[in-house]
Amino acid sequence: MHSSFTSRSLDPSSLSLDRSSPSISSLQHTRIGSWAIMARSRPAILLFLAVVALAAMALAPAPVAATKYNITKLLAPYKQYSRFNEMLSRTRLAHDINRRQTITVLAVDNAAMSALDHYSLQTIRHILSLHVLVDYYGDKKLKKLAHGTTASSSMYQATGAASGTSGYVNITRKDGKVSFTTDDGDDTAKPTRYVKSIKEYPYDIAVLEVSSIISSADAEAPVPPPAPVDLVELLSKKYCKSFASLLSANADVFRTFNDTKDNGLTLFCPVDSAVAAFAATYKNLTAKAKTAILLYHGVPDYFSLQLLKSNNGMVTTLATTSENKKDYSYDVQNKGETVTLQTRVVTTSITATVGDIEPLAVYAVNKFLKPKELFKVVEAPASAPEKSKAADGGDDDSSDDSGDETAGKGDAAPAMLARWVTAATTAVAAFALMC
Image 1 (tube, one colour):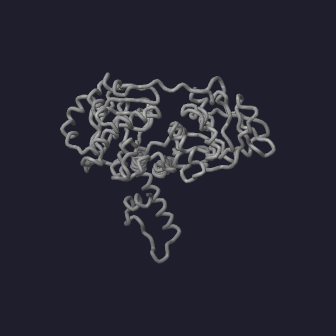
Image 2 (cartoon, rainbow, N blue to C red):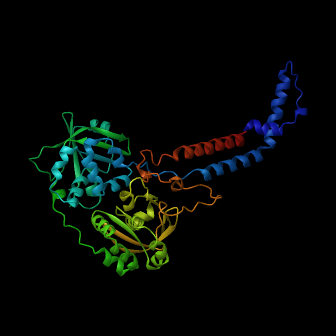
Image 3 (cartoon, rainbow, N blue to C red):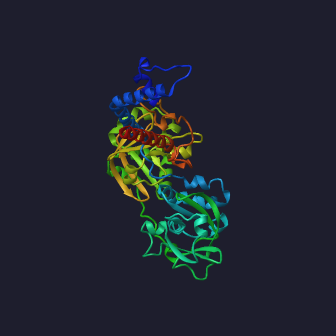
């Protein structure tokens, strides 16, 4: 940068250098002349550096709050934990784990999971919540524990499901062995021992194998099943009577929604005016396409409105699981209090909450969702500064960006570069001021 400024500022005629043998006096004259010129151009230099610094800060992407890892994808290569992994998804604990910044997951193998066979799904959620510590305990940290016991809060405690302090897990290291117990555990049961580390990303997530299910009378207590919900009745009461009629008319779709709602379902129902506007198009769809587009409005997971307002990203739908090699996902984006669903064909907004009682959430939207698998994609304008990640998705089956083990790290390099540029220009500016 200095050389470019110098080349513009220096007057060659002012330098009388002997090319064959430069003298000390001529070099001194040149150096003094250069400093004098730099001194005269210092305001311009400082102004330019300030502009560069501001541009670097403006271009730097917002810092990532936490590196996110997808627990189900981390465990997927290890078939010996497949039942544990499956239950994390069925109980929706996987979603809760993926939202956390610092976490330790205590996994058990398929044989140990048989101890949960006689429990209801909600009770299994409570028990497995004890296996998720809301702190980081990697292999090295466990081995450095002093003799004695320390207590860590589990997700069972953190979510308020535990009675009193029964959601705390005691971690004890004795004779080189580490065990995990609770205060209300069965005294006759063998202690749950640490076996080995499965996967660790220091201070973000540690996935460890333990020997058995952690015992807790409170977590193992029966949980009443959720009150039955008549989906058609719920939709018909508020905003979505026409969409309810479409669901009722399709037996396969209606059965899928009913089978899913007790295990976690978010349904985006088009308001009656949106269904009316889409009626002619819907009528001309094939039976298979009608099934797909109705399932496209359901997400097999529970999302509160607050969660939708605080998180952006792709979601898979009930249509994703029903169609092989088809994406059928869309992008959920929020801006302030507005939540939009972007399918690349249409963008719709949530206009009202029809019902929200975990594990079921139903939201009214102002347009019928059109998947790119059935309708022509609306290309982004050429002047758009940057295409969204979804715009390059095509029919890619990978629709869960949070699942990438390095998700959240992609912006680290440009952000770091911008910070280095800012620091460098600031340092040069400070140097110029001192000269």
